[in-house]
Image 1 (cartoon, rainbow, N blue to C red):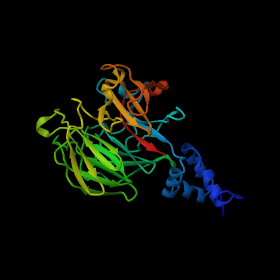
Image 2 (cartoon, rainbow, N blue to C red):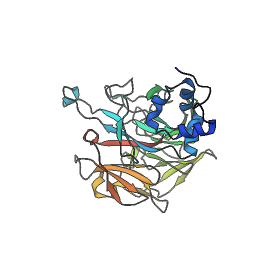
Image 3 (cartoon, rainbow, N blue to C red):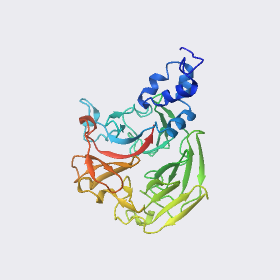
Image 4 (cartoon, rainbow, N blue to C red):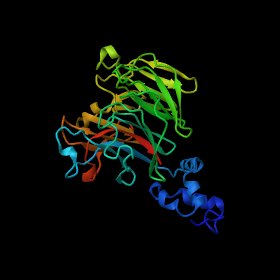
Length: 340
């Protein structure tokens, strides 16, 4: 590998850094091979924040999406579980791509796993083992520069159908249920860079099948239900004030009488709303992901219907269909925004 004393020979350091900051994220893997200094630069947190500060990052949707069935695959058998992978949609270029499988799960992601992002990296947590259906505590972190997964420190406790969201480089998880289907009120924070978990105060109540989102610098856990009222989604939410280190209950935050998972939007007035009730084409299996001034939304108009894909400009704006290649015309279970 070549080694340069200057980032780009003949250019001042500041100008060279500006040039490299403008490279599209999908080229970083190849650019990192130019020399060891470029490799260190492209993989550094400082370079990520330099790109973000100068407006050269891009917000993409990372989706837990049903994979196409391959001829000869075991998935053709009626008893075979569905297989999911991570798809990427770039709303600026309109390009679709698929991330390489997690090495531990080459034939499909853990079922009902959760995605979050931190400092330009994708974090995948929890879910059910696709072969045994046992809940897993696995954590994997995907680096878009190297295009590789690394295994992080396991979640402190197994949980399924929990809320997740990132604030300040930490991924917060809360609620869901344990291996015995008991709803949880516990919460933890994962520092992706340090690969460490820290326990948070408990929420005021158990919240199974809740939804997580970040508003400002607060992590919100929306709706959910208690163990003894399974399926009875509550209207309240809880938000964690990371500065104060405490939860605050928000009454009547969720007015829809349905599961909030992947389904919560924030309106112009700051109130939460249900994406499935905003457009008939996505009334079933709705998934909304805010991408900075625009929102990716997908779903079907009936149970078993073909999925449809939209971009919504602004908050509560007009639904505009987007072109999707045939291999990505599949159900989307959940997802998150990653700024890369």
